[in-house]
Length: 280
Image 1 (cartoon, rainbow, N blue to C red):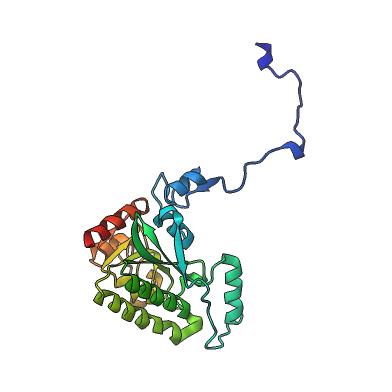
Image 2 (tube, rainbow, N blue to C red):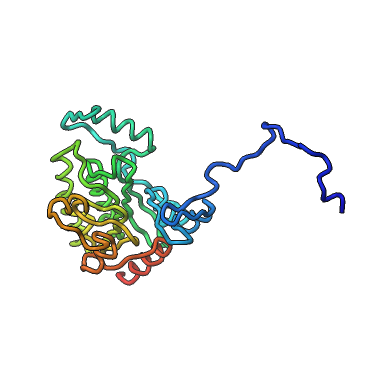
């Protein structure tokens, strides 16, 4: 079997002939550190096949997971933030917004869409944490309000997917006003007897938690999501005591009665469809 033996020594491949693995082929779980193919990770609804860690994803991925064949009509896609307070910190607010738009490809921290989920028509509003921490500004409140109007007009259920650090400080009082605005719109949705499901993902905090995120006919969450008003560090420093184990995790919040159930992202589409079919 001499043809299995390398007869020539010192064979080397020129640099230009070497082939490297393409970027993005593999995904390493930040929780268990195990590696899986990016394609498999995507097919697994962006969850780890080893430890079930739910990767933090944005509106593009959620729409892909939930809408049939990823077909939907985006609502109010061109709404962008103004600068009502002429706010400046390390840079003017409009400059920060423009830079974030260029970096993320998003117009603001929420996107809304109308389509079908397992053949059930639905309006979905999904927040993007990559846009200034998913902060709630005037555009976020307005787009959610208009999405609720669309649900009322077409008599279809409304799903809100929250992921936010809270109110947007650059808009101060204008941001806080969105809490009342969206809550009033949800009251109108309730009067029209149209279902509202609120999905809380990691993290959901601040004024978002204190308004539309906790006003669902059903409040549900993904496993391990951080849910609260103030963060654990702030609470610990304020009360001067250690917090219970798992404090503000979805499982802790469920145990204390603030959630209806926790759903694995892989089962999310089917669970939501079953829930809405029961409510018909």
